[in-house]
Image 1: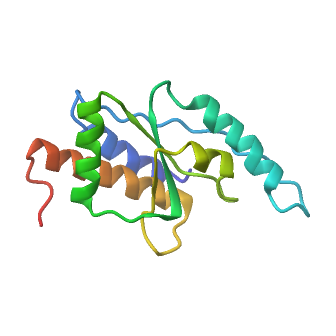
Image 2 (image 1 turned 120 degrees about the vertical axis):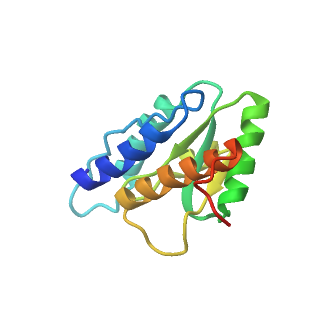
Length: 145
């Protein structure tokens, strides 16, 4: 990832309260062979993603067709998962998108925007929104309506 992506993510990860840590796990993308549609690369990436999901998590898969939520709705989802004692695992796919097997495993499909976003920028946007949602939950003044 470009340095500014890492710096942006690191900033919001550091801001998270100790009782709600945010961990980033990068999965090596599948290698796309020239002339192929990316299906094999998506499948390899899917196997790696599914193997890396923590036991008992709720996979929240980012998908352009997913539910578009407000930050307050995201905060409500987080509160619900916290009350149930489960942790969400947010999944951002690679350049070729996500395999259907990953989407099928999702507890929720989340659309960040109707705009087409580069995956790196989606990462920063997601981390910032998670921080903002946690601020809502904690009553911190970072979020303003």
